[in-house]
Length: 492
Image (tube, rainbow, N blue to C red; front, side):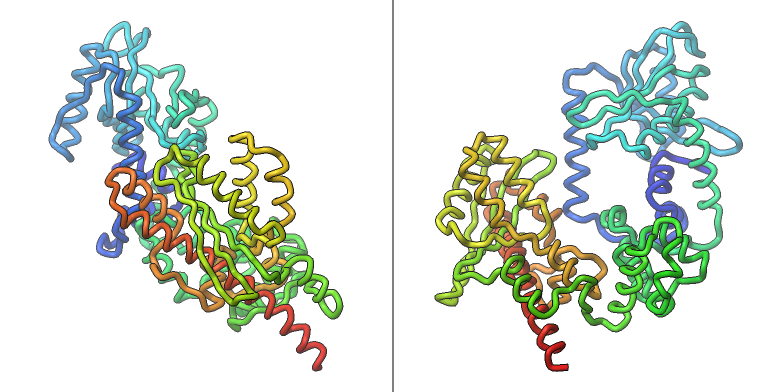
């Protein structure tokens, strides 16, 4: 049986992905998204940047000819080459072939099969965090290296983007590696696919996503409910609560004492199952009634002569805010106008930030609606970065209205996620480019920088404008929901 670092990494993220990679129908895989291909390109660029001042050798062999690659690597190790890039290590361990391709082998003093030298290793990652799953992979490479050279290196490293070397605690990671290897081999030797589970944090870039999502959607799988984590789902499974109907009818008190629940979470999950089952919105606990509803609308969801709807586009790998989009809604004249503040050059970040400030101060009393805290966090970040006078920023902050916070306070919605797209689409809004998303916007901006093709910037602006219009659509729906439900109560 063959074991690779990629198998272990994927198993740690999703045992179903590891199984499908080994046994699934490759025809059902999704094509790599533009954003995923950008990540591959960024990773290759990161490798080139780190290696540009290093002298190294690389084993040369035909693609897929792993035995030859392993032999060429051994030749370089026997010669005592100082640095070897992407060596091929093959080791037989407990009847399993371990194929290891760490990024760098670094020569150091010590005793090994080769003489009075040995090798330690580095794994180059685009990430800035030493995730446990990456540390397990380093331990995997180290175990294979020890088998090949007949000696254990005392240390091994992750080489992180902009952070440099991170020393992995091998004594802590090797027992964890043994557990992961056992679990992975067991999963791969199974006869049936592991159960589907849609995780919002891990599934988006997986090439099996649409295959798994179609199954989950057909089954009305509970993982599609907001708030159903893997831990909570495991507890529900133990009690045979695996359908929307069962969860919707379950008294929250029955779930309150389960690990990871509590009464609030149990109530929220049962309500979420109910609205999803019947595809209808229900008022959340604490919904404002009577006189409270008018006060709530005035204070939390104000309707003003001029309203601004704000959305940002950023490039995290460059730590860059390249677009501030604002939809101006003029209720007096019944008009809507979109304004963009776009840095077509990364050096213009400060210029577009200051232009955005100038614009919002043209309407000093207008509420600024946005979705999630990111926009306010970014305003504070840019103000600090560019030394913006306090009087230019602090009076703005009370004008910001986070519609995500209000939506979750006001209503339980039949959506798979309380993200902007899920909510707005359920409320009847859609984007002109149905495939556009934040990751795609990042890809478009990278393509603009490399090609200067105007269509990429145009696509970003259209997407951002639609995000602003979706935010406006949500605000209007929420106002109607509060007013309509309160009127229904009065009529009854």
